[in-house]
Amino acid sequence: ELFMDISGSRILLLGGAGLVGMAIARRLLKHHKPKTIIITSLFESEVEQAIVELQPMAGETELISSHGNVFVREEFKGLGRHDILDNEDRRKKLIDDTLDPLDDKICHSNALYKLIQETKPQIIVDCINTATALAYQDIFEQSRSIYKMMKQQAKGDAPGGIEKQIEVLLANQYTPQLIRHVQILWRSLNDAKVKTYLKIGTTGTGGMGLNIPYTHSED
Image (tube, rainbow, N blue to C red; front, side):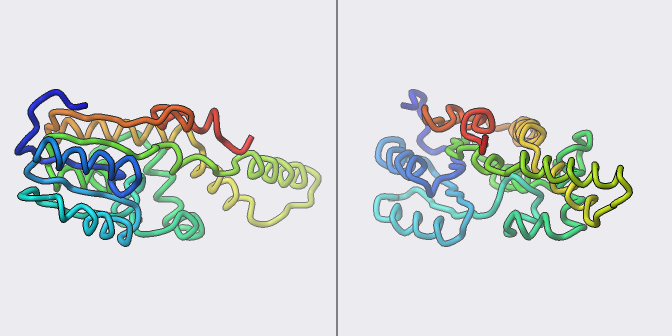
């Protein structure tokens, strides 16, 4: 329940096309009458369907759609993870975006940062189960494979492709990605002067959406 008066506000609803996001959108439209709701989702078809379902109860509230992966730079937001990791240039950019010290260049190229700066919401309601987008990447099997290749190299039987496998492993590490996401989110909120950020979590499937790598990962 949002106790403050948010009628006339501009609201960015991250993950708005999911079950939780849609429930919140309906409640906002029924009880709070915001001026604008920006509905976001990973896929264009999902967010467009959400707009169609919400439009009959929207009244004077403007519904805007946005789609794409908010965990990567803007130029990658429409690509699948395999498409990023399988391309050497994209893979190196992803690693640099995650591991380099955070600066203006990294922030300004990020899809989430750009979305928040361009939409300039007063309120953000984040319904994304954050770690789901980053977990479930089998870093254990990748690590075992690289370790095996290193032992083979030590015996003089050097296999090919170890550099790419190391880069993929670096790109798939959960914790640096989660930390970088929170760093960019914090910077985005301050630069856009967002008044309220509300994170929606569902108990049992990752809590605040940040601990799945430790509770629901492959091992």
